[in-house]
Image: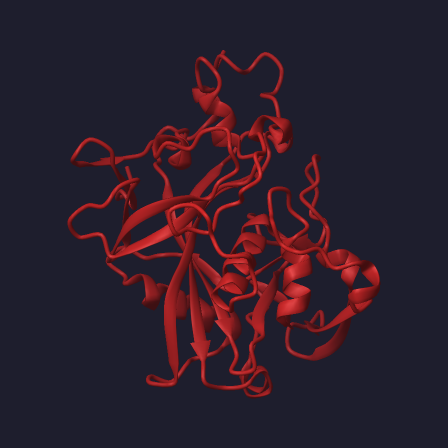
Length: 329
């Protein structure tokens, strides 16, 4: 079995989490949408989480999952469908970098259509954290591997933004999940402008097919397209009809401008399995946290974390288990 990457402090000692268990559920998430304030120990290649302070905790971050999280659905069944889920894996650890330029725009990349996980989605650079790797180092490594950007020491600052419980496929209506991660979003603030950073980007064509920069107004509109947000919604006339991005040619070397319709960025997760181009749900959560960091969101009202004050039941958006498979038979 692979090394344990995500541990929960539930009864005074760290415990591993099985693949089928909901991290948010184990930490006390109920039927509300969250997020939930979570205490974290950010160690080399490992994350320890608890719903209360503990020795060694270095951060207190909001933890969130999508309203249609498959693992939340499993929690509501008498028996998880064990035969359809990996038995030899726990919950893996990922890191993603929200790279902010000095002129307050953030970088998103579009994953290539050929990737096994989340093809054709707009996400920040990120990926797996290696064993014994510092989480910031893992994020900066992924940024370099995907975009070619290396940030000079002393010319950036960083802060952890939040945690996202991720599944792929993301909905039970797509099939049973094959991947289960907790993703740590890191805000990395560069002293370079968008223009300076863009001039140095060299996308890796095996992972990235396009990249774009979002400012706060467009990011707010994108983040507001998921249920359970309290972001102010801009009316269509307040939004530009499109966003300019940079796309790789089919040879993976040449680049061309891409005029991306705003409607593409405002797509939500479809109920059927398809690689429709859109911004991932976790990315929208991270954008909301970034906007909060900029002071562009309403102040929190519960225990210091960014919380949605409106009651909203997860069950309303939950996908049912596929027929005749809820008991694992």
